[in-house]
Image 1 (cartoon, one colour):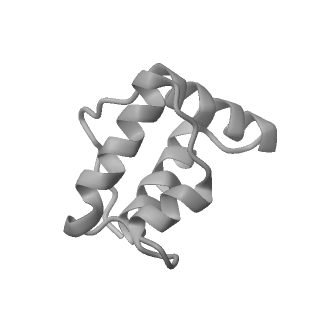
Image 2 (cartoon, one colour):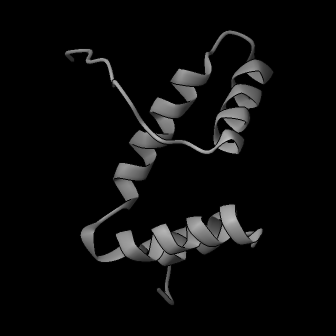
Image 3 (tube, one colour):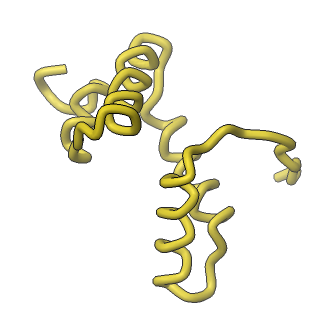
Length: 83
């Protein structure tokens, strides 16, 4: 695997803080590694058909304070019945 450096990505402060907390709770991982796994996982779930829906859920959670569970997100991504 060729390692490429990402120049810029927009993340909320809360996302970065959460990645740091997860990494520090394990002890030997960095926030960047947590974010790499999150991106990898997201790319497994995101398709062109659900991108708009997931972006809307993300916006509602970050801007309006709505809380979604993992099950809500997976359902929106089409991994569970009722999508």
